[in-house]
Image 1 (cartoon, rainbow, N blue to C red):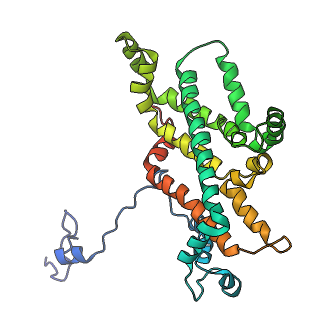
Image 2 (cartoon, rainbow, N blue to C red):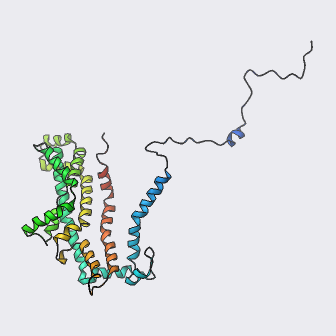
Length: 320
């Protein structure tokens, strides 16, 4: 019996050799595994990116308009496009005229604003730190009632209290004086609540008890131990109070009639009203330049204290 030589070879029990050459393996594209989408690594969202871009443009557009138009004179404001520079660059001349116009009224209003901020916002920060620390670390009758009052005061807008405050101050003879702006600015329910929450998390009770066991008095314990730990929250409350007092318009409007005690907000509004009076001089270029000079101190303070207030906002959000 003969065996045909054309029959296929016997199959290899190990199966066919599918091993590819090294050159073929290196030529094959390697697929990188994408990390799974988690809350820390979310999936990119094109609509959300577009909305965020629109919000950014909406936020920066007024600032860009202010910077551009502060470089123009009165004629350039009316003849040129609002979002681009005019032929003449008059920023330095506008700043000089703003500081010297009307016998240096802008400088006087700036000093008044600094007085209101230092006395009002500074005092509000001190009271918030002391009150928040006491409410967080001491137990006394009526503590829950105080908490309810503070929460209720946070929900009341300041404009709703302006008229009753004016009537009370007029009875006391404090209207048209700096005290009419400083005294209401000393009360900051939100700052008190923020320091209350911050002190409860930032200052360990065990640390205070150890200091008392070592013979430290309450004042020394507060200034040497608690106050350094409260610094981020203190700076945060200070910034919030400064911005609220610096931009305060309605309260000085109803409290102060003497232009010598105007803050910047009322002073610039008075310059703007000149154009609407008979024989008044329109100084729109000075108003825009003054508005730019008004926001520079706040921006500088935010940049200098950025690391403090950012940590203060995040404090207490995570429990160890």
